[in-house]
Amino acid sequence: MKKLIGTMVAALLLSGAVARAEMVDRVAAVVNRDVIALSEVEKRAAPELARINSAVREPQKRAEERARVLKSTLDALIGEKLMEEQIRELGLAVTESELDAAISDVKRQNNVTDEEQFERLLSGEGLTVKSYKDFLRNQMSRMKLVQLKVTPKVKVSEEDLKAAYTQYTKMESGDAEVHARHILVQVDAKATPEQVEAGRKKALTLAEEARKPGVDFSELAKKKSEGPSAADGGDLGFFRRGVMVPAFERVAFALKEGEVSEPVRTQFGWHVLKVEERRAVDVAPFEQVKGELENRLKMQKTEKFVEQYVQELRQNASVEVKI
Image (cartoon, rainbow, N blue to C red; front, side):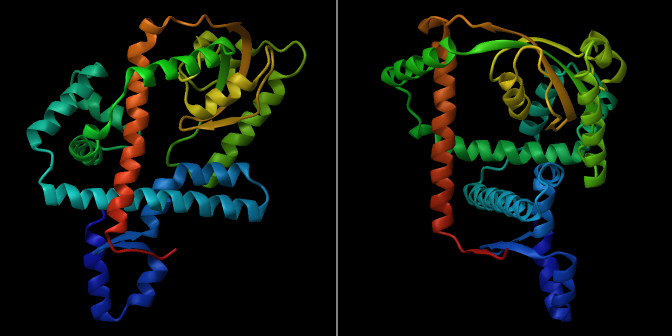
């Protein structure tokens, strides 16, 4: 999705229009001979930037947060560029038959029976069939590279598992699961900062209303929530850590019974939470959670080795950061 930018820059150089090009779209980084445009970085970071714009009031702090997010996003894009080069060099491209099989699997998991339903499903996530295929192809090709270069290094011993279980028991014995309800104010993934802020203000008003004496949160959710659980009074049932999206989970587990949260932003919009009940969680025996712990450790070690692998690629590449 970034390959045409280099050609565009070359053409503008020949026409002497570099200054005008920089006004239209600055170059964020050059990776070997590939260019990453600032607009691409901002597009990838858009949800987090929108959160910062709405949540951080102090201008200097907001600027620092934006700079941090743009840097981490640019680092991720540089890593992806470097991995794409390796994929080309090693001939690890995903074939059409592999892509078709993966899409068929996605459809099966989501109970999609026809192409029109699939298009509607993707549209709800702000995607087209083509953009989703491009995304999936890139993910699958990177997975091939990881399996070739990283996976053989990932080993989980019995000692690793026992140490993980010891940590698991410490966390679980002091943890709980919560029964929560929520009111959702939907905000489109492509919403403008003004629309995001309008959603936050609407959610803030609902939070204030929910805290008023005598107000039934369940009835309020039925009337005002824009989420699929509205008919059930926003009821999410009991859940443990690791089930909900991180931003949602952090707030849910920090609330006391009967407490109503400030608006919480996720990819779905703004949420107002209320914790109905907290209860202790029994710790599962080692054999019961061994497989889950092994998968978790493998994932953690894989992520660590992928980071190391990308750093090695970066050290051996020409990477010039422009922002």
